Amino acid sequence: MKSSLIGAYGEHLAAKFLREDNYDIKAANFKTYTGEIDLIAEKNGVICFVEVKTRQIGGMSSPADAVNVHKQENIKSAASVYLNKWANGFDYRFDIIEVFLDGKQVEKINHLKNAF
Image (cartoon, rainbow, N blue to C red; front, side):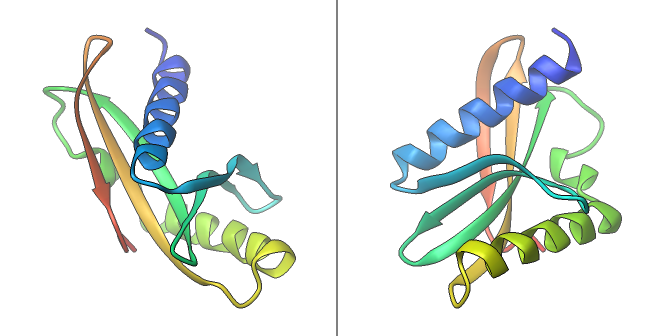
């Protein structure tokens, strides 16, 4: 499977995972001139800016390791745009969801809250 398809599949699985945990998905692939946020979700009055990383089982590093400082800054900048336009005054946090696949089968999903 191509990496772009793996990423899209992981984002789909992460959105489903969040919905099953009573999150309301506000946006997917939110793009600004400074960056993109994979998922924006809300639960209990907290806006969650979620970066989704999908990897096949057996990789050398954790999917979360791919969310480096530069990526975090881009996400924070995009989040600022969203907050100013649609969610001024809301509490918020930055999460990472790791999706682990074995072929096309979901092996495990980790939700890292307040990841950065």
